[in-house]
Image (tube, rainbow, N blue to C red; front, side, top):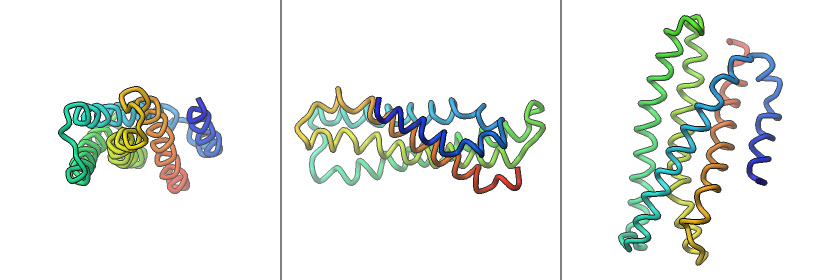
Length: 162
């Protein structure tokens, strides 16, 4: 719940940007949902590895590197697709800059949240807690905060051109 309040705080921090370009609100659920989904998937991969005993000290760096690569690749693909859709959408009047903002935001959000999703159960396991129970809500909330911050920071930086 506390992390959920931080999510609201991020939105409130960028309230002027949101008021200036109201259409930005349209993409909040997609950006948050995508980040949460990839974070949860990455989390599941790591929790499974911990459960099966296939993750040891020597393989952690490789695992995190692989999950980051997955996040980057997925983020690039999803970011490119949504940027193109927004750019050609008659509903959005071909706003290519909005497409770039959302596309880059998705790319960065998925990359970072995938890494957070992989690292969180490892940290929780190191603290002698059950990562299957404690990780999910934490990863989702961190993904929401990170993705909103990235999205609104990029949009605010380019506000003069929107």
